[in-house]
Amino acid sequence: DIEASSIKGKKHKNIFALTEENIALDEEKKRDASRYNINFGLPIINSMQVTPGKTITVAAKPNIGKTSFFVNLAKDILTLNNNTVIYYYTTDDSRSDIKNNLIAVLSGLPRQYVSDPIHNKDYGLNSTNIHKIKMMATYNEANALVESWVRQKRLAILHSSDGVPDWTSFEKTLKYDLSQDKELENTVKILIIDSVNKIEVEGIINGNERAEYLSEHTKKHWRQWQYSRNI
Figure 1 (tube, rainbow, N blue to C red):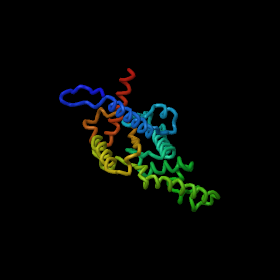
Figure 2 (figure 1 turned 135 degrees about the vertical axis):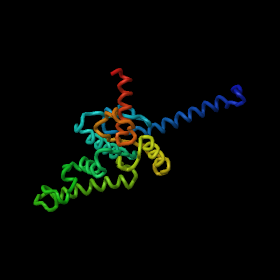
Figure 3 (figure 1 turned 180 degrees about the vertical axis):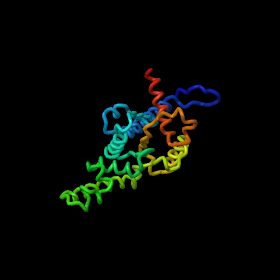
């Protein structure tokens, strides 16, 4: 056997044993990496080879459909994969709005109908529309799926009113919750932040005092993107 020399009093392992150990670690990393082979439902995001810790910033003008994009992305991730957990954080829309948007994209039903399927004047149960029973059944099926994701700890919809005071506390809260939940050990956690439209925060002395701390965090990523591409 060829033994490596002792460095600072620490005897190294036999080089063959070390090689075997490194090969085993490499194979373990490969197996572990396969867990992160997530299908996002969009070729452009799938091509990015998203790995743990990576942040993707989506920027667009107000009212152009960012929330619709995020909701459809969440739906695709949940329906196309079985080892993912979505944390959807919203600062503008309520939890109910996000849930209704999910039901609408899952069912194909009009967003206006989904917000009040019983009393909707055109398609509600009190209307004379001949399709109302079928539409209600479609709504119930999609609603049951969303609620099952919540029960199975695959979906959590969070709102800025939940009382997390700043970005640092927000990260710590999530990491603590995740580390304490053994059921989520072998899942891929994806955080979607549907931030406020206005991300100009220079006028705010302390962005952590308000919901805009999320926008400030988003803007930092945007600046990094600009600098890295000399824009």
